[in-house]
Image 1 (cartoon, each protein chain N blue to C red):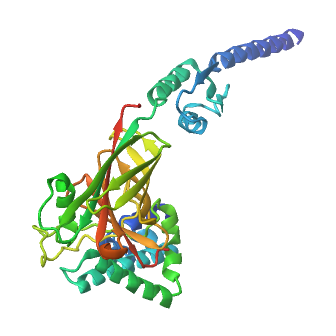
Image 2: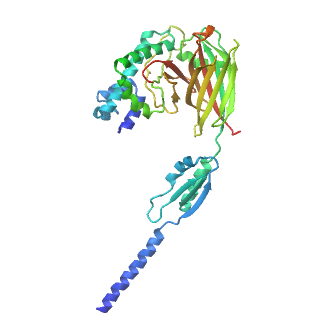
Image 3: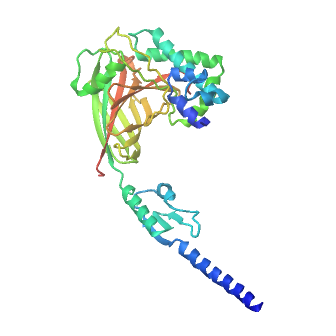
Length: 167
Length: 233
């Protein structure tokens, strides 16, 4: 497996798959373990997924999504400044490989049955998802985009928000 | 001695002649044809057809040139027939595009609007807004390369200006897709601007267009767009 193929797979991998690859298990592991550049990208994507999941949990189940995303973006921005943009530079090959200008794409599965206030989302499906077929969207400068697949396969939500490190 | 030498000369001559005949029979019969491209761009046609041309065949290379909508190919008759079939399949006019827009305002609305039922159900599974209402609708028709403008008046007297570019139309066995550039404006500001590719028949829900002017500050606008491919106008 070469770097291009590995980066494509990293882009659509869920957290468990990425953790497995970094610890030497699974389909990606053989290349990731031997390739420091791809390992860096896998770690960066995994960290991003974890950060986003953490922020969404912290904001609470009844908070508006854009507030959650803004909080996630603020945290990402804080880390970006602290790390002087290292994460984004690590992700640059991934972004170049993708046709998606926005960094983040999220999929929620197992949504609350009635969608009413106070019901918790199941966030187990959060994933970086930059290379989904036909998912080709450009966020305006200075914004990120989150992509939500809905239970209706014919409806996809693209949510733009300010902040974050994908600039 | 002389007789033996003559025998060798004759044998070599015969061998050479037989080898020549064999070589001739192995060389492919090549023909040259020029196809007129009716709809495909030169570079697209070139990339589409190049894999069918044997540029490095032993005994007779194929060749291809394309210029000003004329694709000239030197190949075997059976290969030319295949190429003709490929062009017949793909050198077709691109379909027209019908775009249906729904401008939706989120939050604070308790009644369900049947006009946005499908989108609202999907949004309720993703977002935590209390409710949604339809602000306005628009339908536009265009073709690849079109730049369309449409005003969407709202109940409150505000007119939203919608500009849409149909950048690319792609047909495929699953219904095709459309690359769009979408910009929503009001009060002289761009509320939402993006480019995206959407599958035909699929609805892309774009949010949020933040309203920060006067009494609308803090309210959230969502733009749903659904492209459909139509017969070429």
